Length: 122
Image: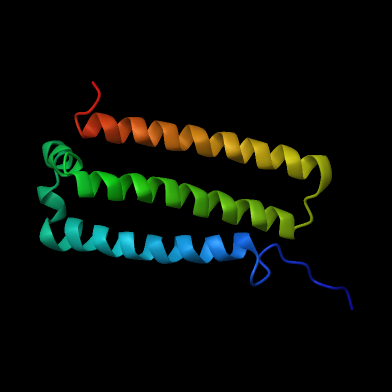
């Protein structure tokens, strides 16, 4: 019987970070649904309202943390799924660096948008 390898073996760093980011994302999504579906109803969500929320330090910080955490969680999941499918060697390194660059671009653009929405940059 062939041994099954998983990059998500219990106890390794990627496994731990995937679980921690999942817990954080569940909490932030609960906050999101409560605030934007029960406190404010969908018909009441406006661009100006979003700008007002983003100008609050706590909300802004939460959204930036959500951006970084969701990016890491998603990319780490995709990378580990590819490793589990047998990706190795040069292909593994190439995919890793493409995902790292894509993650940095995503976080940079998301941060830029958040800074604009908060009125910090024009």
